[in-house]
Length: 125
Image 1: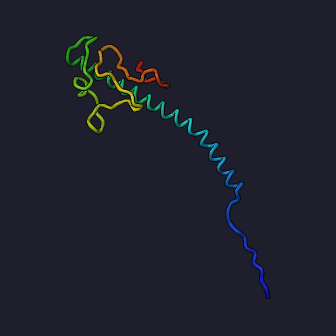
Image 2: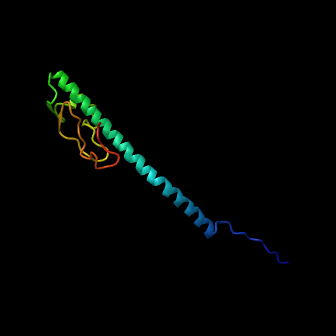
């Protein structure tokens, strides 16, 4: 007596896999630009906060040293004691790769080298 077994192969068809890949691609096309924009905004905000910290340090330095508005302070020597250093003991830098000017004039805003060349701008207002 011959018995026939109904064998069913488990798995996904090519069409099902293609639909899943298309949905993942669509979701990635929506999510990646938003992620890039959020990252740029976050870097700009961190840079502006660093500029605020440098400005506050320059004001504190000028007050303690009895300097007038327009006095120039060195970022690496004069202002470093007034700025919270990062884990390496150095002053925090621009997270987007910009640099801060080495000298800061009291009464004026410190400057990031990226400034308005990127969107959003790295400018303290």
